[in-house]
Length: 271
Length: 353
Ligand SMILES: Cc1cc2nc3c(=O)[nH]c(=O)nc-3n(C[C@H](O)[C@H](O)[C@H](O)COP(=O)(O)OP(=O)(O)OC[C@H]3O[C@@H](n4cnc5c(N)ncnc54)[C@H](O)[C@@H]3O)c2cc1C
Ligand code: SF4
Ligand code: SF4
Ligand code: FES
Image (cartoon, rainbow over all chains, first blue to last red; front, side):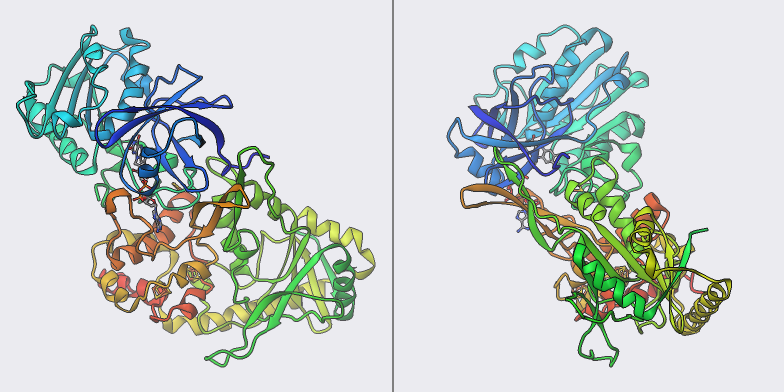
């Protein structure tokens, strides 16, 4: 019988520096590994520790998975400092991921902040695979400064695609930055979308998700059309260890993507 | 209706003697008297010739400690085969109704949902639970307030009910029936008069426990979920939390608590995942990277424990995540009493009867 706590082995093939605090780790699993965009994995640094991350690569690509990781603590800093070609452990995929079929025929608004862009990149690949099914994709990306922007080479390619409307904003401008300056909530007015048939997908730090959600409600989005990527402390990823519970949900098993409708009666979701 | 047999007291001793050939047998042993002058019982591995002791109420240890160990290896990785220790064929005597109820919850957690835990499954299958009716109760017992009767009705392999000259053995599963089939010489078919005697004893204990619990006014299961939902913002949590020393004892001793933490280590060159019980009363339980913590305050952590027991489990299993065993009450150095917390909520919400 399968041992649910045993990771499969993957080889860390490449490490791409995205910004001073964020790197993308390219991992080649030694066994077949499938995931859907928005599902997450538990990534093990052998003998050291594990942490949950959402793959940022195209789910259709089977031989490699990318994981984009911010240096935030014990496991992540050791990962940031590790050499290539070491073995890493992968458990998963866990959680439900994005219900792409519910976005069909809609204007899809995606709002990302910080390393929250990682799962959204996998989502973009998922949407691009069948782009004609969606009316349009409106992306609003907020980074702290121009130096914190990740996927720098890819954003112009995505932004130039047909049906895509992209805007990047930085909280704090500097002379090198010629684009928009202002918090993410300032670029959500006058969106080129038809509110009556639109969905919004939000992923970023909790404080950003909170204010973006409030803004979207204000703009007239229905709570059931706002998709949030929740983050809480996790250990098992399987609804057994108890850590990630909010109210009646386990984030790992019932999420990590929830509609605001599902969560609106749950206490303390933004803490 | 389950099959019921009679087994005489001396025959039960012979049976246990024989069972030791094929199983590791655990049964209750009396511990030195505790501070309340009650005799406590503890599950011990019995050796040849040990007599089987009947415990009138539950043991100190939670039954979960047979199925998930406090700290143990959960996986080896990568190349190696898992080398996990199952406990072998085990028979546990002295299991009580509250333990059985708690195991509905442990089973729900580890056998259902996204996936099942193979080690838990193996241990469950290799273990025979022989429960028994309670014939007395502890000061902290409040099973009836959680809709749990002081005698098991389901969930056991065999249940023993003491009569004057022996026990009625009710069969609750195929494993229980196999025991009878394998050792038929010890069992006789139960007589109607014996079944009537069991009923009388059971009713008598229920009446005594009801009388004991009545003045305690513990809120019934019908309003417990409401208490937690509506009492979310009350000061009950911060008041009761003042004496908490964050030892985690309440969680670790609780038979329904199941939280754990996975840690990685290297042992003799092999990478291992180690699984250990965790406590939501610990400050780090909900901490995320960067130090943010939704349960920074002890009051939030106490509330988290109660929302799990009385909201989450009502929502998913239609039963409270508490079997009324009272273990957490005995263990808490801060004298935080789950019954008093529920009562305080009821009083403040004007829902007290
Ligand atoms: C579903 C999900 C998807 C995510 N996706 C991404 C992603 O794509 N990219 C990304 O950069 N980040 C992602 N994160 C966040 C990422 O998981 C954290 O940044 C990571 O866990 C940090 O680990 P660390 O060991 O470096 O940090 P630390 O701060 O050292 O530890 C963080 C966690 O480890 C545990 N822990 C550490 N010490 C203790 C202790 N003493 N007792 C108990 N617990 C302890 C806790 O659970 C704590 O929350 C995601 C999180 C979730 C929940
Ligand atoms: S909460 Fe306390 S009384 Fe209820 S099952 Fe757990 S230890 Fe027993
Ligand atoms: S047993 Fe009592 S003191 Fe210890 S953590 Fe639980 S509530 Fe706090
Ligand atoms: S991470 Fe263990 S229950 Fe969700």
